[in-house]
Length: 126
Image (cartoon, rainbow, N blue to C red):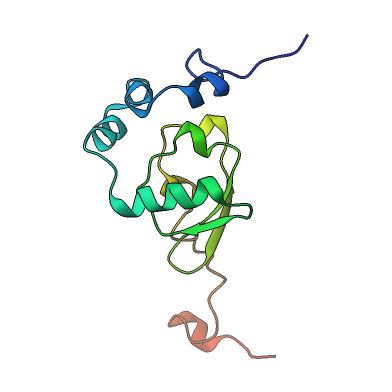
């Protein structure tokens, strides 16, 4: 028994055939509003380059909505300091690129050193 992956009742092949206006009816309202206002030129340019690309593409467009034609591609999203490699999957449809490239890391504090507090002033140095 082969399990066919679907997204909101449609396979990825069906989603890739429908126009963006039809796809926008399936996504949440914030992304739908963004697509209904039209794509900015930088998003259109990135999408054109992504269609022709053979290797992972770099982008700063963290606010771009993930479309069905982007599924299966690898892209590098800028996170403020480094490039984060993301492979776009069917479950990511309708989300924004920036959601998958965090801009800050969790702070891991170590134990306090000598002189960090008043009480540690009197610790033996050994």
